[in-house]
Image (cartoon, rainbow, N blue to C red; front, side, top):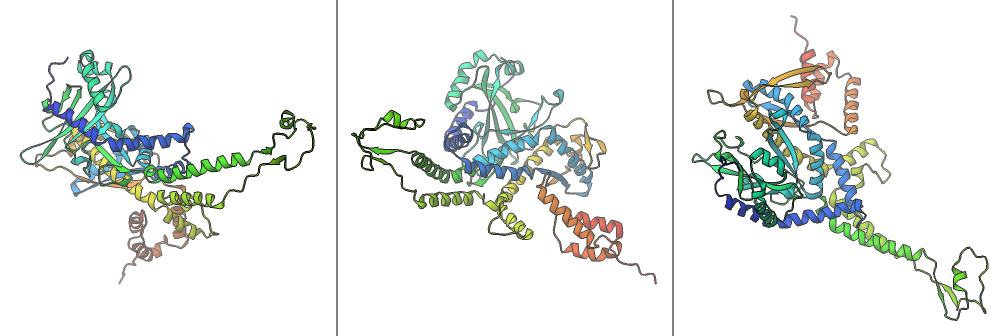
Length: 518
């Protein structure tokens, strides 16, 4: 075991706190497990959940059409060049992290369970040991925080439990796992977790240490059982804490708020209605099965050869005596009451309304509406709930990018070169070093605001934008002699890119006012 590592303060108290957080989180974990069963029923042949599935799939398609991208804006003029460079290199960093896949995976979790968890870490193993930023999707079941806080940053502690390879840990930290096996098993039992062969539970304990001046430092203690593998508080190279930005490296993206750090999702709002629909479906199928079978009432003294009667290939069935309706009569099933189907349709409409999955929001139009403008308005109105959820995701993305900027500031000690491909396909190679945005001798440190836009948009949105541009062109808005009127018109309009369009017109034609030659 590595004797150079010293324990962080109150490790035994930290383990007790972790177990308490696990206990307080039991209701949330029970809900997640139940929702997981409902979702798995889609592909395991269990109880049907097709309406929930349809709702989640369509909402997921909406968020994929709106994958976010960012622009860094300077707060002061002297920060402009740094903001411009960051705006170009951050998309490259997120692409290296596979953020698009992470975003997709987490959106499934957000829709199903109400909370998507993003981890924004510094990973020393990336870039051939040089290290780089690592944005990962985390399972909510592996994160433990103070239940009851509205923001995870307000939790006194944060624990992330991972299942790690024993061989890799022994090589990285110089420990002998055989001496820790009993401690690991004890903690795993207390947490109700199990590990596969060759794996063990490793706990990353993040905590904030408050200094006399009121500033907090974020520290990391990594441990197995009661053995500390690493402690930033005991590391001389971390005088300002593990992450100098002082924030937990976790961002929650919530679907519907609960007043706590986590939220709830589509399944929680619709599970009861879906169960009722499933019960009606089961009854209808059972009734249909009975009604589709030809069955008969028959007296015991019927005198019919039952074997021959049931053989549909026989043309003649022998009988003894006379056969009439008193001896042999077909069993008739009364038609199903219309109220059964009406109840099912009402529950389906309820589920659609609760989940925001009305037909119009999924492209369906009824009622004889054919006008393109009316259809567009209805679809815009039907997509309000999806847009609201996407805006929450964008707010979470701003927090993610803010952490990325701070990790660049802290860890990019050497100049790194990024290949930037412009819209015209031209390549540009930019070098950037985190030292350039650290505090200078005068104590000033550049700060940036994050502005979000969508990388991808629905094809209909692109078509609408292209059509609008063509209408402006056909109306003569881009003619030099109409520049003044066009600028006046644009001042009253609000659409994405209007500022850039006004700047382009002024650049080409000025304000469109003829100069006085007198």
